Image (tube, rainbow, N blue to C red; front, side):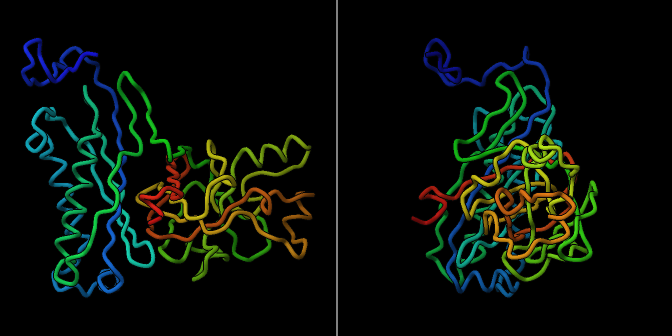
Length: 312
């Protein structure tokens, strides 16, 4: 096997990428830090003595990403077009972080995404160490990368799809009105939706594949017919474990709380469709981090049924 960072005499070298094509590159990384219940309360309430930990850690991660080639010796300086970090508390004592990097260049942005993530996690530790020096970084990993000759890569515990449509209804038990853009509010759900609120089923999701199955049976159904807030494609939502983290849109982070539901009474949705696939294949989630979500956005579903994420 050829080790490209070594020349024929075994000396370290920077790989020559001059002959590579420039393509759109993207990388998404994930990390988690366990801070303890006391520090978590201060993080959520914004009462840490050092200030707003998430804002400072976000800036630290962005600055670090731009200096990746200075920190990791054999990486190339590249023209980042986008770098952002998103934070969300995971009860009862942890914070998860997603970092995303984009560039149009001859080499990938995996190291930029990972460097941003690593420094953001270290900065979070620095912000909470006055409360607890026992905080621990539990996980730091690449989830997704695209672009270049090797194309798309996914971590083994990740699934990727896209948002097909969004839908909102003003009252419960009625079909939702489709739309191409909506805003997810943390610990609430989609703004203006009747099902949003302070409970575990803030957002409902259903796969386009499930809707297509109903259409193939001759039912006249479409986006919103089954009262779903978010219609996706490419992921078997009903096979996701409880606790799966879903990352999409402008930093939206959801946590899967329920698979399917029991319908005690037949609602207007059932009578219009003649059947309802939602109880069998729909899922529900709460909103950990909010933002704008749009038709066509990429979705990353990260299973948390592995020891490093579940704490097992």
